[in-house]
Image (cartoon, rainbow, N blue to C red; front, side):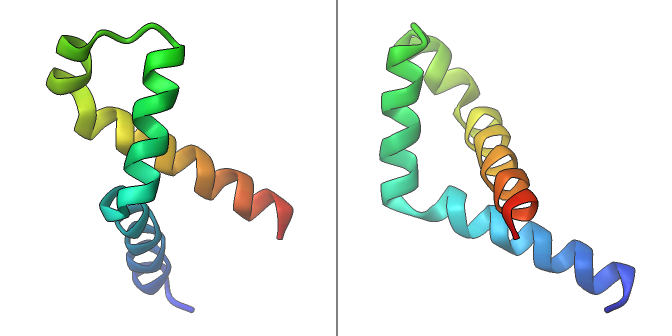
Length: 64
């Protein structure tokens, strides 16, 4: 697999998570438990979703 294909594949994995309604709902619940305000969530949700998608993919990569 070329580097470009790997990058595209990894980005797609993350975007699929970010666009998944169940993943987004889980992230909202995590944010609430962490004390992230609705204002902060709304201002930063793209970054938070991608950060957590990165973390999920990292864990999946380690377990495979």
